[in-house]
Figure 1 (cartoon, helix red, strand yellow):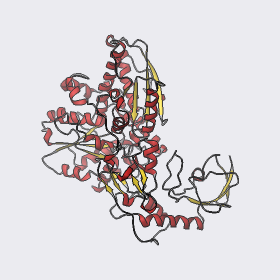
Figure 2 (cartoon, one colour; figure 1 turned 180 degrees about the vertical axis):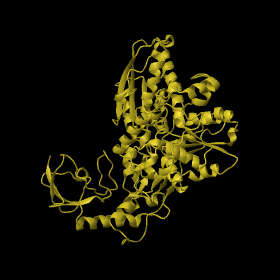
Figure 3 (cartoon, one colour; figure 1 turned 90 degrees about the vertical axis):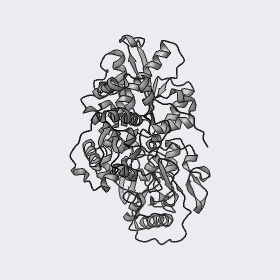
Figure 4 (cartoon, helix red, strand yellow; figure 1 turned 30 degrees about the vertical axis):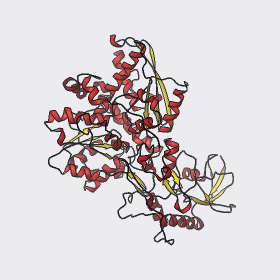
Length: 590
């Protein structure tokens, strides 16, 4: 514990920490624009400059380690003037357009400039060339707003292992983007949106579909329904000043009704449906392998996360047969809504519009995949992120905090606690095992709280095993079988896991992969800024939602049972196969 002096006060801090980390532990805020939690600092923005007595120049707090006896000044005149100069230089190149920029309310650059008292820019002149890239369904890049902090480069390369974004050219002409200044649709971008979530300004954002949804809502010939993903209810409140992890399920439902949706449904219903299909698929693969001795693609991977699917199509096409054929809950919902629900409601599916509220920008891409039209129409018409819904509610003049709690509509609005935890890394695995265990054994899941602790938390790769003794005649071949499972979140972790399987170093039956750190609660469309503290707060809220449900196992959902009785007949049946399952193809990398 080295002793250092911070602003003339002697303190002890942990060894091997940087000045930035030490200051944070002491409750001191040092502004920064390039720092990314948990990754090696790059010192690119220079906004975190501090003075260290004896040093020839000011130093970057994010990349300078503390040493015994160090005397640090975080806010003296020299430091303030240097930071002001750095930020003014950034502003001189920044095509801000704050009057109508979507980030004007949560722009980190604007906030720092305000705190530094910047009222004018002393460095005026030529601005860099501007490139607008709106080539993908999910994201829009505006190089004129880019401040070259390289956060997006860090998250794309070191967290997601994709590497679609790099600094291009040099010096004043530097641009951040795909190689050879290509558009995102020309490279192996999975459209996860982590770049948009981490960008401090408006240089990368989700493609805004709010106007299209307003147009649908105001079209009197359309029947417009909405589905809300489980991660939304633990994050939407942040758009209205609530602390991270505040559950706002009831207020969210009421707000959606006031926006004019004809029915408010829950993606959780489709998550329960997914468990029925995916759990049965896993059991059938195991039966073929263990009883019929057929060659079967094992381990089986989950298929709920569209960024992961696209990542596999680009980087691991030989593992595509291992991915569950189940569509994601979003797409299952759309297919069921435009067939089963449309028939019950007496609505022509051609006049139905399905809107999704998702924590994920990649869901915008997924909805437009050509495979996603099993209903005879595009199953999901528009996808809004959590941030877009927050803006839509605010722009409609709805006072969110004063709303009463509403309830989901029937029949596609009822769900179990197992569906809620789809929002968290490890949640799909827990939900699946709750159902698979009880289907095979006819007994209660062994954990009294229905939790599987080894697959929970923010560790990048997690694994567990569960001994299943099949006592139901159809599944008695699973006699004391140890089912080995693994969970990975963040695509770089997924790559490490798959590489270990390819090398024969790891063996599993079932694997859950989520694209974003923390799972959907840390999705690219969630309220900013998402760090591990925020992720954990949202995760805890989701488990609270699960624990508060009367029914916590997907196979116990009475509305899902009715759906099978009246329409689908059985999991993996002919109709289920047509509406709820798909397959994927290899994509060529540039």
